[in-house]
Every structure is written in C-alpha cells, then in structure tokens.
Image (cartoon, rainbow, N blue to C red; front, side):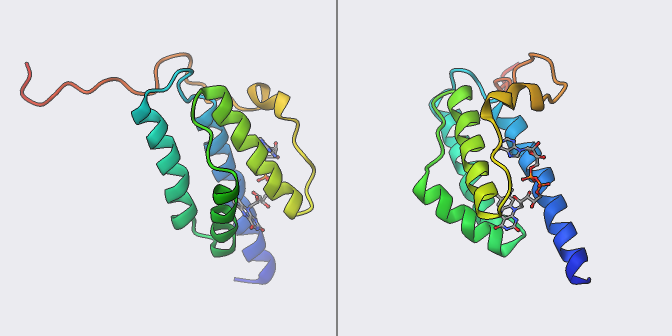
Length: 125
Ligand code: FAD
C-alpha cells in the first residue's frame, strides 16, 4: 500500500475506533457495579495492547499510565475519554473537541435499554 493509502487506512481505523469508544462510554451505566468498572478498565488496557497501529498503541499505553481510566460513572468515563482523545488530538496537531458536545455527537440509536442483562445460570429453570 502507498504511504498515502497507509495514512488513510490508519485514519479510518482511528475514526471508527473513537466512535465505538465514545459511544460505549456514553452508554456505560450511570452507577456501575465493581464488575462493570473493572470490565471498562480492562477493555481500555486490552485495547492499548492489541490496537493494530503499533505507534498508536504505544502512545495510548503511555496515556493510560499517565491518566488511568475513570470508571466511577457514565459521566466520568465519557469525560475522561474525551480528555484523552484531546491529548491525542493535540499531539497530532488537531483541534480540541469541546466535551460539552459529547451527548449531541454520539447516539448509538439504542434507546434506553440496559447494556447488559444478568445471565440466567445454566440449568436453573
Ligand atoms: P478523529 O480524531 O478520528 O475523531 C473523529 C471525530 O470524533 C471527529 O471528527 C470529532 O467529531 C470527534 N472528536 C474529536 N475529538 C474528540 C474528543 N476529544 N472527544 C469526543 N469526540 C471527539 N493516529 C496517528 O497518526 N498517530 C497516533 O499515535 C494515533 N494514536 C491513536 C490512538 C488511539 C487510541 C486511537 C483510537 C486512534 C489513534 N490515532 C493515531 C488515530 C487518530 O486519533 C485519528 O483517529 C485519525 O487521525 C483521524 O482523525 P480525524 O481528524 O478524522 O478525527
């Protein structure tokens, strides 16, 4: 692939990933359980190890060390991610995003249904 092609592919991957991450934090429970908090924290750390763009993954790992994920509520998770994305924007010479616009920008079209339901244990019925 050409250099331009690589850059375009990397940018597309970045846009899709950010969209998923922001939409996810904005659907994170308002009052998460300890298990949900651990899941979100693990998710970001695993992503920082497995993200396909090596340079991005390395930088993201450094950011996670400096600014550990905030998981105490939906608002804190969404605001933290917005801040971290702005750190990446700054490094890449992009404009700062106004985090007051998060709710208006990201809508998964999922309504208000809970993101997960407790599982029924196998053989319990
Ligand atoms: P993006 O930054 O992809 O943003 C997409 C849209 O999200 C914007 O148009 C805007 O509407 C909205 N947005 C912008 N900022 C915020 C914010 N703070 N909060 C909420 N919404 C916002 N690329 C590299 O070249 N080098 C890297 O090291 C690198 N590291 C990355 C690390 C991660 C974890 C990810 C997910 C991506 C990384 N990228 C990196 C890709 C890069 O961040 C961009 O996704 C890519 O350059 C495309 O940029 P864009 O201008 O289209 O907007």
